[in-house]
Length: 233
Image (cartoon, rainbow, N blue to C red; front, side, top):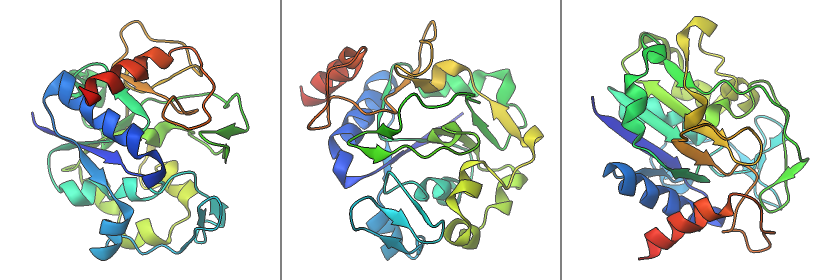
């Protein structure tokens, strides 16, 4: 089975995004596609009103958003149309070929498959001081495997993506619970937030990492630094 991989793009974290894409190519040979908000707006796919003073603010949700791709991630099945598509945040490192996910029996018949985290963030801020927003199903949407042929994903319209509050989108409101598949925790290991799986496939630096200018060294930084060294070589 084929798999298209979409990575959220934020100009403030361009280095992280490029390292994520390079790590994907290294372990799988797949080329990532970036979700760039400016290009999606130019194409008429993204029309939400945001305020860019200080932290990005989504006026539809009446809430801050920590990245430029907070909502654009949900365009993934519309952009892909058919087959399987994977969305990941930009602050990840691929450690195994993500096509291994397609072999998990737990995703059979699911419209979207995620790691179903149950946790409360340990810090009130993340990245470079961005406010840590708490909402149901926190971080489920940071790695999403879409079956773009599943009829349930047709309930997610372009209109809804641009007009529904982000909290609804991030809790996968358009799906019944039975339509949400469960990925192994290895495919969205929240570095330094959740226990390290035995054989991690995606390391997700949800609190930030060495690409940030004022980052203080933390455990597991070497995972990202090794991937960055490979991207630069």
